[in-house]
Image (spheres, rainbow, N blue to C red):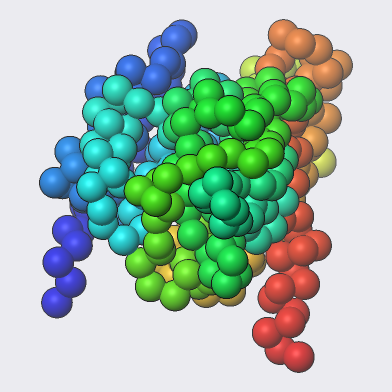
Length: 347
């Protein structure tokens, strides 16, 4: 019998509360902390709720539905996931408590392309130093601590805790088309670290590191599902009131078929995402990431078309979702890369 509590019964309530919260004009970090989202799957002894990724998935979907510009992906989903994945130690536990409480922000420098550890931990006569570079790291700018997945001299993955202002560490913001995300390049050029800043993963290190990449990809898939659902809802509302030739355009057969196609696409994406959330360590994650992120781009594109001329204007807001969907499609492995992983299983 699992000791992990079952939160499935409150998912609808969690979704409703999240939607209400994200409807506010300003969503800042203290608000996410006070809502309990940052420490949602952190252990209770660290001040968290002790929930599972299934609850994280609900929040990620609602963030996508609102196209919310928050630091939740990098500073909560990925950072907390990384801290949960290492062996308990005093410095790790202190940082975990600080992140959950909102007194410190951490970011996991996981390359956005879904690559393995981009950093190396070398031993020199001056001590341990970190070298490497990771691009498209979400929410690194503004974080006080950077968690760098690195390989030690034996090529074993470890997690290195580095202060954002440490000598030799550079965080450069990367402009992207999607203005709801903050991405950065994290470069370490001989950053000196102490022994207490090098943390070992709990379990098989390579499997755990792969699991962090899968967690990132699945979180983005959940976000894309929310993006697609928001675009379908907005389109259905619009075609009900927009009239042409004396009747709502939603009554035209071609428009009905287009909306039905969007609904079917989202239904398939939801089934795949739910399967991946239930089995986050399997091939289901690649299936969800590949399909859901492409589906969001397709649905947002159709939404723009069905909104007519106004869909191409800044006032409609459709462009915000389309750009978010396009970035999601590229983060943590493209659909082609994830399909290649799926096909490799059957070779």
